[in-house]
Every structure is written in structure tokens, then in C-alpha cells.
Image (tube, rainbow, N blue to C red; front, top):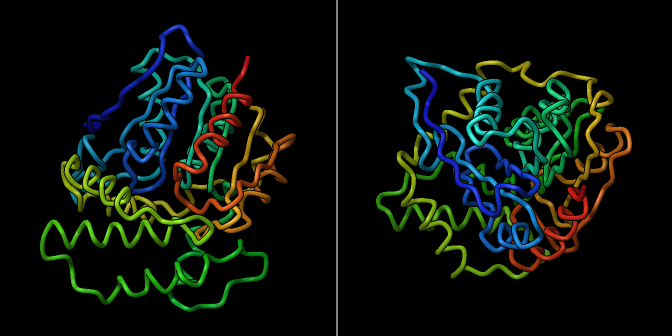
Length: 291
């Protein structure tokens, strides 16, 4: 049985549809309300959703019903079907960008335009790069650039840290993670981070279920086809922050591999979507998705 998928939409049903696709283990509400509001004010019908095993979407007993990232990809198509969309503009963040790239390859008729933010190139093996960096292993020649040292140090520390004992400790850890992902290019608003992480914590059916996304990645390691990005026909916008700590330099590689893709570097931005960049991001997406 397929898990239920929570989604919500904003704007007029007659406007051009944008589906926002978040990254691994991330709820749809990490697409900031202000950013969504700017898109709807620009004449777009905007849909955001929670991946399975995140937020208000259904959770899965992975041992009894294992799944792969192909299933998470198909959930995106299910969301589009549920909202009556034969095609849409896909705006994707982080691992959500892999889903968008794959659908643009496999189902080009469903993708009007593609925007990937803070993502890695499909087929680049970013997961392996990350694990080797965390384990202190050398990267093979030709590998994607490694995450920033502060990112690696933070997640190595999580390996040996005791689990949070209560809600406040859990939220404090989530804020610490957000601080690392935010990068060093813009001031970090801890009060705003706390409000966001409290929202993420309290709307989750099962906060621990997000770990199933890692199991799904291990269940099929060849999820990403190699050497297919030249088949992407959708007009593509690639966005990366100048202080990206997780996938630094990956945006330029995506833009190089997709014919006609355009790269936008956003000053100060890391791997999150803080208020300082909403205006620039929204303007870029609105221009890219204009008919």
C-alpha cells in the first residue's frame, strides 16, 4: 500500500503550476511561507508537499515494506496527479533536485521547466562522496567536490553524540544542524530557526521515520542513471549559494551537463533558504517559469 502524501496549494487554479520538491528527510514547510507568497503574488499556483516518512505524510514500516528512491520519485508524480497536473514547473532543493532531474529525463512531458537549488548532478554519486568524507576516506579521481570541513565535523560529532533526551534537546540539535547548513555567508537568526524547527518537530507524525530515506538510498544504490543529463529537454535553471557547505561547486557541473542550462550564484546563501535571498530566488523562478 502506498503511504498517504500530505500537500497544500496556494494561488489561483488557473495560474501556471509550480511544484516545490524538498530534499531528503525534509518536510515541505522548509519551503518558506514568504518565498511561496512571492511566487503566488507573481501569478503562480504553488504546491508543496511532505515526502513519505516526513511531516504529515504517511510513515512506513521499512522492514515490512521497504522502498527505494524510485518510490519517492513516484510520490512526486502522485502529487501532480492528485492536483490534476499533466505537467508543471518543478522547483527542487538538494536531493529533490535529483528527483526533478530524473523525471525530466524519464518523463519529459511532465516537466515544463526545471529549477534545481543546492543540488548535485544526477549520476554524480554525491551520496558516496558524502560517506567517504564522513569516514575520512580518499575520494576517487573525478569525484564531486566534498562538503565543507565544518559540515563534515558536525556530522561526525553526531555519530558519537547521545540521542536527545527530550523535545528541547531535539530541537536544539535541529537548530545546530540548521546553523551548519546555513553556511557562513549570512547572519544566522537563531530565534527564527527555533520557530521553524519547533514547527517541523511538532507537525511530524514520527520524527525518527526520516531515517528511512537513508535506508531507501542503500536499498538501491544504482538509483541514479549515469550519463543521461544531456537528455534533459526542459529549460533548466541551476541555483547555488556562494557559501554552499554541502554540495559546493555541484551547481556548475549540473549546468554544464544539461544543454542550455543557466547557472545563478546567490551571494551569501548556503544550503538553506533564509529571508535575505527570498526576493532574488523568487524573481529568478518567476522569470524562469514565465510563459
